[in-house]
Length: 370
Image (tube, rainbow, N blue to C red; front, side, top):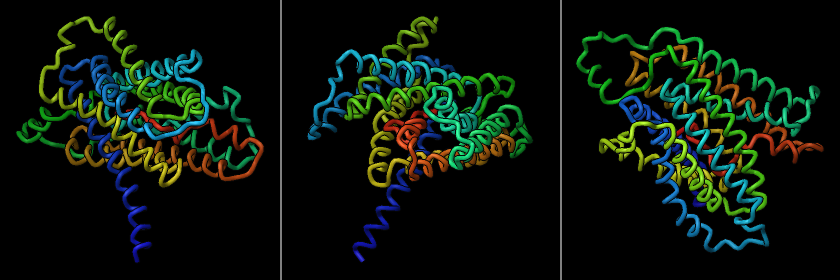
């Protein structure tokens, strides 16, 4: 009985942990959308949240790896690794997060979900272009990933071009609706959704490049939390430089409300430490593909929040398109899992293409995801 209970807990706890991570990610994305809509600069937000994450990660990384004994590895402060850490901060934080939050400002969390689910498809396309994956039309796993990529692209395109009717129509004079609109914001006007979606797609491309760079770093230096703390610091510095030149209003650097302060601390703590640590623990317990399997849960949470609280601005087309993108995501992931479980000459090489089991999954992520 004890063994059976331990097995149940070993299944239930990781499941609940990952579902909670996706729910918290969407909730923070909605809060970020609200803060940005009411005046917070996206560039300043990226600087502050990553500054909080860096402050937490730096001491924690040394505590986390305190008892870890490594075989001889290249020093993290050697020029090749420092260059890669710089590129990790540049692509994974400075470029991708600024593009992601700017895209969020022009769209909504459901669009963020749909574009985030393009990650394995974009990674697959990128791996073909870089020659890391061979074109093998007779390989069923390759065909599965091609089909999944096509489905993902269709879902993302529909997300941008087709809205459909709103989920729930409210009278404009509703006092309750007016209060909710002032309290939280879920979406922007749809006239700039295409631009927002393109920014989010570009952010996802940056994350794909970041994944490739990260694989090379981890092979040479296995203490992942130290790597994360250093590239987070680099990304914060680079984002500060970008914000300094882009943000002209000096008052934008002022945190104007307790809500903004809470959001910055919560986002930095969650994305920098809590989500990373939970994902690493779940991968250690359940395997490398356990964590990415929960990514589509973000659609469920975004749909639930959208229908429940923002039905007057939430469109059926957005929901359907996001679910199509989710199907494409799972199809590509299925092809990758089957490929890694199979036996073939390119197994090890292809495994590097789509780093769906990275130590740090982004806000838009992401983020991003937030």
